Image: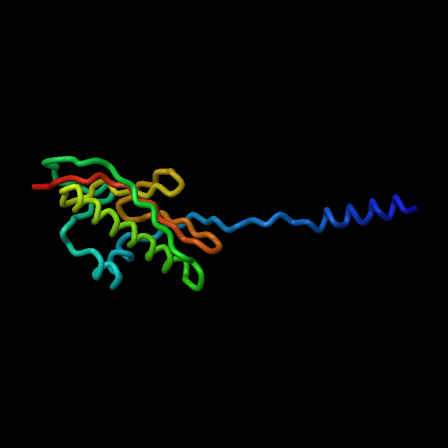
Length: 146
């Protein structure tokens, strides 16, 4: 009898144990929306031109290399879109800073590389939205355009 009660209690505890699954959504949002925010206008100074994958790009005079920017933000009390736009803009500012440091005036073939998976689009970027953290990873090639 004692053995049956112990087995029943153990089975009940196992049945009640539910694994916790953290949220990890992959979302896409329009690049145009993020680039038209007040934050974008304030932080991107126009010294560097940006060309996303699939956009027609002028021929480069010099190529400095391909670089990745992976930025995250706290997702607490932010909408997915708001958090993603913030992380996207932080990644774009990092690409702008890198281009200027390398001597370039443009970043071409910019595309999302969230969790090292390429997502190429001329109109959208990919964002990872978790329970507490939102992230955007962008990769692009720094060049000097005429």
